[in-house]
Image (tube, rainbow, N blue to C red; front, side):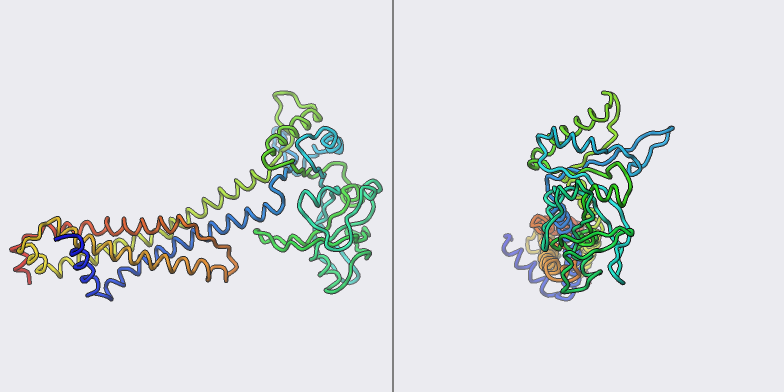
Amino acid sequence: MNITNLFKVSLKAVANNKMRSFLSMLGIIIGVAAVIIMMSIGQGSKESIRAELSTMGTNLLTIRPGADMRGGVRQDPSSMQTLKMADYQRILQEKKFVTKVSPEVTASGQVIYGNNNTTTTMYGESTDYLDIKQWNIEEGECFTEEDIKKAAKVCVVGKTIVTELFGDNVDPIGKTIRFKSIPMRICGVLKSKGYNSWGMDQDNVIIAPYSTVMKRIAAQTFFSSIVCSAITEELSDAAIEELTQILRDNHKLKDDAEDDFQIRSQAEMMETMSSTMDTVTIILVVAAAFSLLVAGIGIMNIMLVSVTERTKEIGLRMAVGATGPVISLQFLIESVLISVTGGLLGILVGWGASTIIVPMFGMPSSVPLWSVYVSFLVCVLIGILFGYIPAQKAARMDPIEAIRHE
């Protein structure tokens, strides 16, 4: 019997038991759809995070204080005071692979205008900060270098601050708000960025001259961090080496001493987040893949029942010349037909759910094409692996005993 005839016989056998075949396929459909949906959510989340980080500049570099050992106890980096004005000024003087630099001082608290108030964070920055973080001014203008020299009480605010303090359709330019009892005049409004992937409102922000925040609000002489922009993303490593050497020299660190600062690039953060999302995706896919294992066992169970029910048919085929390998191949084809058909339906369901239903719940989704190919291949393997035992059972039957079977 040739392959074409075997395929026709197997297809007819599957069609003769439509409900049983569909129920066998159902496990495969659910399993494949679940795997594709999990992969699409994982891939979509990774792409969303990468896009979010890219909006802050792929060549962004952040210098933060490093942890230090004091009395045998490692100190919290946030409590260290290793970044000073001298570091910022020397970076400005000696930088070659860095284009923009901004020292950063932060303070959290309540901002008030009239009877309205909200809690926010004020960032003390230089005029380069907006370019480094790719912020745009929508109304008004940014503060100037002269404002920084004078520690002027001016600021740029995000859209959330405007809405919370002034309401809609109100021009806030020139109005004075109070942050920790310090009056600050609004000179500009930032273009809205909305919420990021971590659920943080990026528009709930106030940006002021770093000198103003240091002297009038935080009352400190050190920086929380220094943010820089490398010339290009490819030169980020060279910029990190340059900044490291400048800061080590400025801090007079010996050759064998550890850095008392940390420099992180945006590319490094992207890599870390991508690695984390890959791990989460693998966990989700493995959990979903267990349903494929259960579906495979279901197919094997149905095929064993089918072999038992068709014992007399198998005996008759053997009596008229069908060999054991031919009988085995027939049942393998039936198993693969059920598995692959269920897999194709599962791919359609998974793709449809990923592109239509998942986005309706506000979750990012992107179906990687390779997940479709892998799902199809897995379905073929499931059909072969879980159809093998029933096929061998059918092939090893004694034709005489099979014909006598009632």
